[in-house]
Image: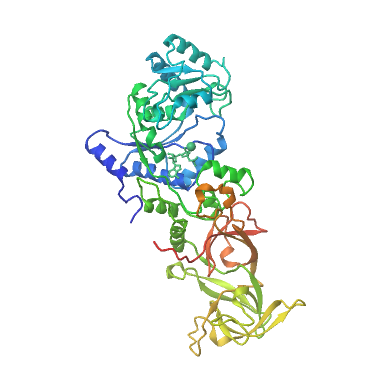
Length: 550
Ligand code: ATP
Ligand code: MG
């Protein structure tokens, strides 16, 4: 199935609207609040909004929903732009909701003039008490029937900074007994004497999200405003704002189920906590489910897009297995990442009958499944490193790798047979001694005898020391996820660091973010932050195999 080819209910709505000539062309938007870095849930929304615009030859806006000055920052604005582009999307327009503050203010004044908004002075607690509950209607505020003139005067004074934060709010006058609590005179403007990243100190009153968002959509001529399910109850208010503010263009809000993934927290607030408390190394820590974390880990935009497309668009909440995302990463890298030999947990192997002064360059393939990717020359000499786990002094049952007296193939090289081991004073093995058989060279057509195992290696004389970082989920799922603070679910072993070696050949032109498939150990990516010429650092992107089936 190709990307964005799957059918979904939103698509059907759009097809219908176009057929009925409700719109000539569609306009969607992706409206993040710049209060954190984007995560994989946002990727889902980005793929949906940008994907639909592309498919129907429409337009898509990237809009920063920056109506809350306290939490927003230009650092987030920049990271969001970078992430959307990295995912492979181009916006038609870039907007800031804060650029509409003048229009929003005028619309609030219009509501007051129509008798549909009033300045209220109830305290927060009183407001809560007056709001009622799902079973009881609310009570009308004593300030509800102020005259239009008085409201206009007070609202202007609010704007001019004559009141303190929280002293007054502007509320829509709708229906205190509505079964939908969102319609019980919601607050539409509040006072906040704070500096906004875009409008600086021009304003000390700010529109509430539920008032601002429908106006932003209408101002931009958005035809289909796609949001997550928790906004379903807000739709009547959304429609009320668009109608009563007499907006020309009428957007339609459509809700879909947000993406949830096992072992993953997906809320900017929680992710920010992980960063602020130093639990992770910033927003782009390779364990973070942020776009920047996945990028640093080595996930590709193609894999993320494919994942978002394959999980589909649902009308009810569900939870996706995190291994499904890994599956698409593996599938994509299988094509792209060249093979390299690296030893993560090294032990030295000495071929005692191999000439000390000799070095051979052996031809080894770049992709085990694709011959067109060609071969490279890898150096081989008397002393090598192999994985510690590829040797056992006292082999367990069915262990076919190296042990005293046993013969194995060194990948792309020769058969070697273990003769003895060298130990240190603590009885730890420090060297494995072998002999090799020159007749058994790979590609020579040798058929004399067979071995049951092939192991990988690097040439000790010609390799680069490096660091390998292996990851496990940052969050451990448990039965009662809901009742637990997610900080109690942090996996203490989410990263382990190994020191080993990698062949020189594949590293000749390697640069940060390059990806490789290490024989047996998985896909790895050169870290973009910590890796340097003196200290090569690899992140494991995904292991090679998983029990997960699509
Ligand atoms: P968070 O709770 O993580 O802060 P948010 O919804 O408040 O997320 P916004 O910046 O307001 O974050 O979101 C921008 C867009 O991304 C919205 O349209 C929102 O619906 C969508 N979005 C956010 N999280 C998800 C998710 N998990 N699945 C699908 N869409 C999401
Ligand atoms: Mg939000």
